[in-house]
Length: 244
Length: 252
Image (cartoon, rainbow over all chains, first blue to last red; front, side, top):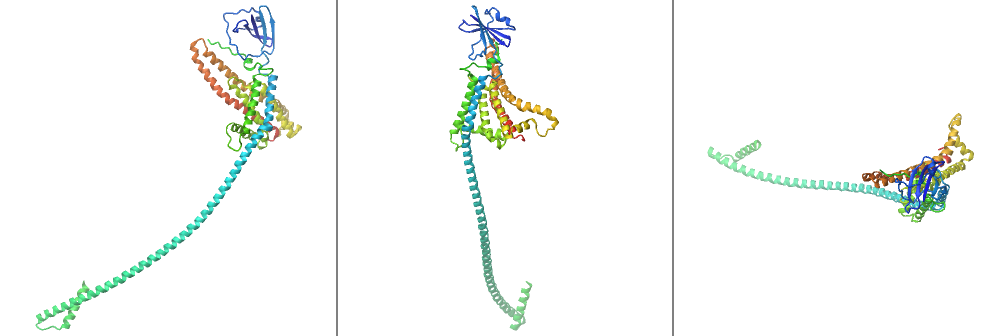
């Protein structure tokens, strides 16, 4: 048996589908129609049949009427209401759950979550404040330490200066003592050297006087006055010393 | 040739009842409410003293997004009392949008006019109610219909425009914007899915490799719909906040 499914939009038929309902695998013959005359045409499958898989999601016919005949059934299927028009049942099933969700959210879900968030934020804020206080304390301690460190450094500097002065004084004193010792020893050495030099000079003078007296005696044939020779030698040696 | 038959618009939009007066759209709406409730319920049960993780992190991020990204931007601190309403609205719309890309559901509930219309109607009632509550009936409609600073002669033009804009067009545009965007996305996905299937099953074997082109587009659009689902929920919510803020504090 063939069933003609006529899709209508208002008064006009937009398509006619012939469905072989006896077949185990549903086969549709889609015949586009421009007018309703095709609703009454003989429904014979043709070689141009286009098989269409049965869909689980078939559009719902809002209104349908069937004309039963011995040879088949003509089922006029309305295209349904405007596809963008809201349906009452959908309005009800979307508004209802949202309203329940809103009420639950307003009085139960959100306050509970917000309370937890506020509690954690308060805890974090409190810890943050505590950390700030600890930081301020630490900074005060650091400042105190720094000021103490400055005092200690100043005192250390003073002590170092004092020690340095003491060391300088000690050094100056030691140097002065050493210089004095060196000067004394130098004076002693110079005195000894002068004594030695005077002794040597006396010995040289005596020897020169002796030699001069002998030479004068030999030259003159008589003994020279020892006092005169001695004075002359002495003056000659002094003159030689002053020239050198 | 490709045997491509695009189904009538009703075939991709209207669903048979799963049971009496309850179809896939209703199922998605109920699931959205249930999932939203469960998420916030489970989030509320986790310890609040430790750093939020998992589902609590999701819930708290959503709350902070609504507070900082919607309420504070439009109504300021005074508007924080509206957070539960806006949070519910955003969550519900998002969870109704997302099934458009979830296998087996593959239909955003907001691509049917009922849901956006119901929500827009409720928003209309809420912002007008809030305005009347804060300013009184006369004060509210005076602030809406007779904006201050406009020369009195211009009220002849401005008042009808404001009436149409604030009282009639707002809920309509709110509903149509959400509905049309989600419907367009749904139709695009259907189009490329059908084209992909047709090319892969083409009798002419040379056409089969070309099936990857619409399939690539289908994958791209599926990812794009994730963004659209979020964006449309955000737009609906922030416009609601703007309308409420404008009704409660007309001087802003």
